[in-house]
Amino acid sequence: MTESYTYYLSISKAIADTEESQMFGKPCFKINKKAFVCFFEEEMVFKLTGDSHSEALSLDGSQLFDPSKKGRAMKEWVQVPFHYKDLWEGFAKSAFEYVVSKS
Image 1 (spheres, rainbow, N blue to C red):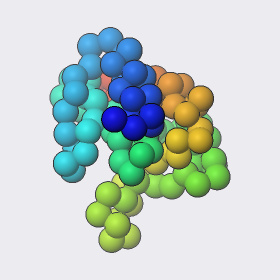
Image 2: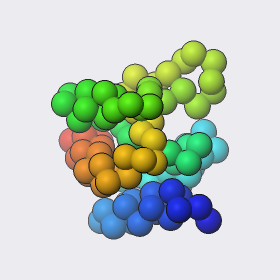
Image 3: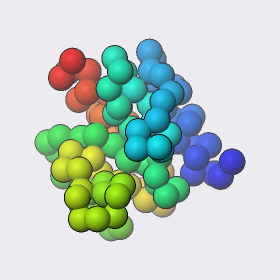
Image 4: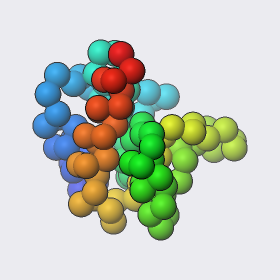
């Protein structure tokens, strides 16, 4: 298990009432059957909106999540590199709150 995956798990499991699952064949965590974070290419991906989305996307190396690599990025999902791991927990909480608010 890589350091980045271990970190992803520790953050995601610490959020109450979540369940481990899969999204596009990648590990993810869900709340109320809706994904709010996933793990892809040693990076954490977050479903975000508003200021959190803008902040995450402004980080050097961050990008919109495009799991197919065919230019079809998912506009609400931001892939954040491991070197920003200190910010991952905050983004995970924002993603959780966003998805819960839509349920």
